[in-house]
Image (tube, rainbow, N blue to C red; front, side):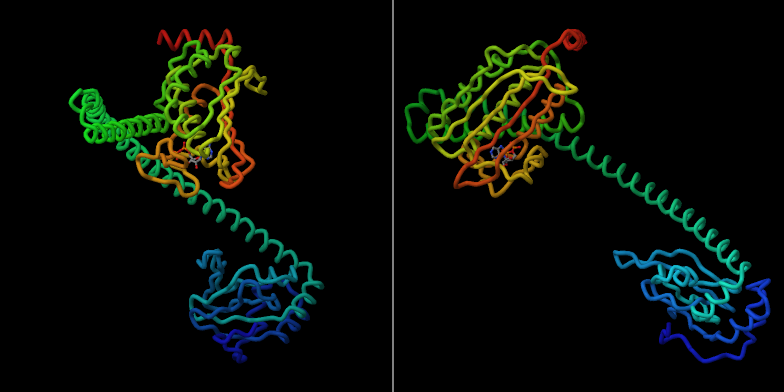
Length: 430
Ligand code: ADP
């Protein structure tokens, strides 16, 4: 290849005598043929002798100086492979493969090379077993070198990744600790505030002044929400630090659900939503923490309410199923007639702080249609269900606010067996 920085003038060097030691043992006739076809070139520092991808139409013997062989990476950086100096040759690979160059070659010192065109070189190679063996030995050596280089690169990349991971884990722990401590510290005064606000709401003086009653009602609602958010943040930070301790006891899902209709009674009425609960009475007992399990269904029903337009229906259905690798399970499905969930979000919504679309963010939106939440409910639900050895997932035909295809959230929890019962006993004692 004729690169501009490469001088193509024939230099006054004795090519045959230079090639002789390099191609040691080659018959005179072959040396003569190679010498006849050779062109001697000089390269200044930085000149590109051949470039990755271009056709391999010559082999280069280095007389003096030094070249580096490198590859262009996707991110525009260069990956250094090796250097070659006097008595070595480069460029034979593409020549033999009849393909493009697999790497580029650049002079890193003023360099003189002997260039021999492909046709002549292959002709001589065909006649000379010793030259073929030499090329084989050289190629094998190169393969070994590049293997070792690749292993060293991988090892280095692995070390860097491990360090980065450790650094990220440290940062994540610090962040989680910070969140946990802050939420804990803030929840205490908020709990006190809530208590005082509730007392104020019940005070006859406040009750007697409509304007004051409305204001205090606002304070109570906002403080309740703040309290709930801090509780959720604490729940999530416990899940993140594996600090979620399931104190197991036999749990009836029917009993867990008893508080749910009462909890949402007001909003269901306000928004003309129907909540139907069926099939829970005959469910077997499972093993777990009833307060935590209550949170799971609280968040699922709360979401069903939030993402279903007024007049819609939420149906909770319980049944027993056999699950592969888990055994007999209680399955509770919370189904709504709401806006649905796009298929690409079905898994992501269980990530903490993940919310789809544009949701309202103001604090009074807790059970309003599409009212915003902190994006923690499903992360908590998933963490709690998994800590109980169960599974949770979402199903939906898609997201459409016009047709409201609805969503189904399925929770499966292992039925209490003798072995779980003994575990319950142990953890209850422990
Ligand atoms: P948020 O506090 O935002 O409700 P969640 O973790 O409970 O946080 O839910 C995450 C996201 O999943 C919600 O922002 C919403 O986009 C989507 N989502 C959850 N439940 C439903 C549902 N029943 N119907 C439609 N979308 C839902």
